[in-house]
Amino acid sequence: MLPIFAECFPDLEQVMKNKTENKGYPFPQKALVWEGQYKDLSSFHDVTWLEDNVKPVIKSYFNDNKINAETFNILDFGCGYGKLAFSLAKTYTNSLVWGVDIDEAAIDAGRKKAQKNSCSNIFFEKIVDGNMPDVLKDKFDIIIMADVLHDLPDPNTIMANFRTVLKPGGYVIAFDPPIYTDHKKNVGYNDAIDFMPYSVFTCLPNSMSERPAIGHGIGWGYEDKLKYIESQGFQVLAIDGEDVKFPKWRIVFK
Image (cartoon, rainbow, N blue to C red; front, side):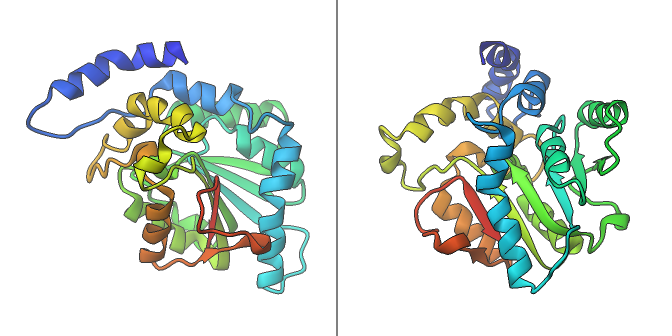
């Protein structure tokens, strides 16, 4: 992590000196490479992580929509260098996976890796300002955001675009650090201790890097995220009877 923080110091110092405007800076390239190429999906094998965190949601989606199909389309939004997208494509070989990101270097790397490894069920697209290509309209059964929601400078635009590319009844899965909205509860709480310092250098500045510069970062509390998602016209879902009132990594909505 230290090389990532070191890359951020000059930019962080610059924006903190700005007394007239709240501004941030984009996610540093070293962090994108680490998140997208080297960071494990979990402390376990990728397949185990998908089995525990994604498969139950896909099963619920099929049951909810009374669908019996072997193929479906998944969007990895904010895919970076494609670690999650490639894991999804490898696990769900009969389905199609799209990875989209604003970072051109990451998208190029994903395309080259897919071509090198002859991955025929994965595609990468660069997006601008969170806007999806028309060709993706009503395309996806499942959208996944992994460590992305709290980074967005303009989540309203993203949510509006999700409605255009989701199939009717489609699900969104957001994996985000489960921080309490009431920060007194975060005192001594391991997830807050682990992730809040990282946010100061990367997530918070990125969420202020473009207008409207909403400025959430990892400090955006779980309870407030649920309220926000519902304010955008989505319904938060309890998968397998889970209690969604208490902070957890996975938020599922439709």
